[in-house]
Image (cartoon, rainbow, N blue to C red; front, side, top):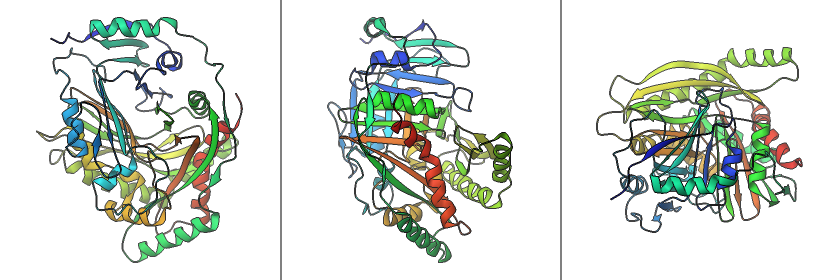
Length: 452
C-alpha cells in the first residue's frame, strides 16, 4: 500500500538555484522557475527529480517509455500515466501535489492538426517529454515559505539529496560558445518570406502569421551555467530548465499559456512589442507608443478572439471572458501588450483536454490557427522544436500551469538554438518586423556570449 503524501516545511530561499543545483545531476531533474516573482503568475518555484516514469512522444505522435501506455494518442497516454498516482492527496493551496512535469513542443501540434511537417528538424528532441513525479519541492515567493510534498519514504531520500546544498550562486563549472550565433535566414531571405505572408493575407488565407527565424551556435561546457547567465540577464515568471543526456531546454518565458485550478482557466497571450528605452524618457515614450498603436492592439485582439474560441471548445458556455485587454507589461529588454482570457472547464473536461484543444498557443501561430500553422511550416526552413511549445505541470487534482516557450534556447549535441519571431498582419513593415525578431533575443545571445 502506498504511503500518503505529507507536506513538510523547509527553509525558504529567495532563489531556487542553490537547491536545484543539489538535485540537477539526478535522473529527470526539472526546475519550473519563477525567476521574476513580482510579475503576474510568478509566485511559485517547483523542483523535482527521479520520476516514476518518463513518456516521450516522437515526431509521428507515437509514444515511447518504460512501463507507460504507449499504444494511445499522446494526450490520452499522458492522462493514463497521470491516473497511476493516488488521488487521496492532502487538502492544500499549493499548486502541485504530484503529477506530470515536462514539455510539449510546438511540433507536437502537427500530430493534432493537418499540417504536413515539411520543415526539417532543427534539433533531435522528442515532440514531448513528460515525467510522472510523486514528490516536489515548492517555494512560495508571496508567503516566503517552502514545502516538501512527498511520502515519508521519499522525504527521507530527498532530504539526503539536499543535505549538502552549496549556497553560492556560482560554481566552478564553465560554459562558452565556441562560435558566434549564425542566422538560418539572411535579412533578404526573411523579407522574402515576409512578402509571402503578405500575399497570403491579401488573398484571404489568414489574418495574422507568427513568423520566426532560428539562430544557432556551437558550445561546450555546463548548460546549468548557461541557464544562470540567461536568468540574470532576463528574469521572467515562467522560466524553466530541463536537461537529459546531450539535450536540454533553457526557457526564460514571460508568457503564460494555460493555467487551470478548481476548474477555472486563464490564458495570458502576448502580442505587441517595443524595446526598452536607453533613458527613462525614451522608455516611457516607447511604452506609450505601444499602448496607443492601432496595429499592435489589433494584432492582440485577433489572438484574443482565437483563444476565446479555443477555450470555448472545453469551457462551459457563457463563461469565457476577457478581464484584461492589451495591458502593458515590461521586462528587462522589451515592453509587451498582454491580454487575459478566462473560462470555466465544462463538466467531464480535464486540463489535458484543455491543453489539447488549445495547443499550440494562438499567440505563436496566427489566425486562423490551422492555416497559419500550414503557412509557417511552408515558410520556416526548420521545425521549431520546443520553441513556441509549452513547459509546465499537470497535477493529480486537475491543476495545470504551462508557459509559451518563447525566449527559449534548445541544446542538442553541442549546438544551441534560439528563435526570434513576431506576428505579421496586413499593415506590418518588413524591416521593423525583422528588427523585432532580433530585439527579442539579442540580450539572450549577449548573455550566452559573455563570460561569467
